[in-house]
Each structure stands twice: as C-alpha cells, then as structure tokens.
Length: 125
Image 1 (cartoon, helix red, strand yellow):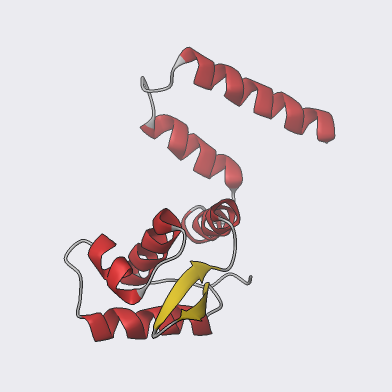
Image 2: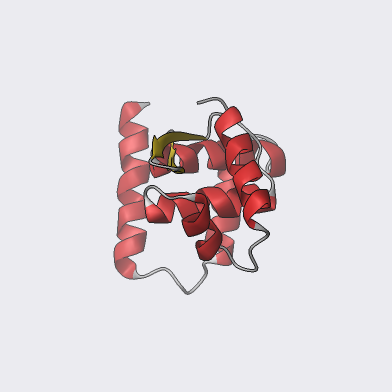
C-alpha cells in the first residue's frame, strides 16, 4: 500500500476497523466517539476503499470492511510519515522526542529492550 494521508475521522474509522477485525457500517459507527451519520460513515468507508486502505466483501445485504494491510505495516507507514513531516526525515530526532516524553515512564525491561534494538541495528550496519 502506498503512503496515503488520512484525516482525523478517517484515522478513527481505520482504527475502529482494525480493532474489530472486520466490520459493517453500523459496527464501525458504534465504535466511533461522537459518530457521524450512517451515510457519512458509509461514504468515508468507501473513500478508504478508494484509497486502498480498506477492502470489503458483501455479506447478504451489507458490506463488511477489512484493512488491506496489517496493523504493523500501517503503523510503520504512519511512523515514516511522522518522521518525514515533523522531524525533517531525521529518525534520531523522533526517537529523542519519544524518549524525552517518556522520561521516568520507561521500565528497566523497556530500557533493556531499547539497548538490544540499538545493538541489533549496529550489528547490521
């Protein structure tokens, strides 16, 4: 899937579909905070299908929507966009911002895992 920018409500809808695994318009609408009308949710789901973020199948009279890619792949794409748009394409700046915002909230096992990840990257370089 290409990198497709999503608006706030589109992200909420995609998140709802990921949480549900597969969902009808009514199920997505129920999962949204302050949901828009049924027809608005249906239109946004169809737009997300056009953007190739979601796919659908017909089940009787209703359509059931599913994500096109895994949640992990979608997260990596969103993170690449974040690093590019907010950190000038500099991953170190993004990591530094995450660590600064996590001060005191990282458990020792989290820090150990972070060190292992860094070691793994160094070994591959």
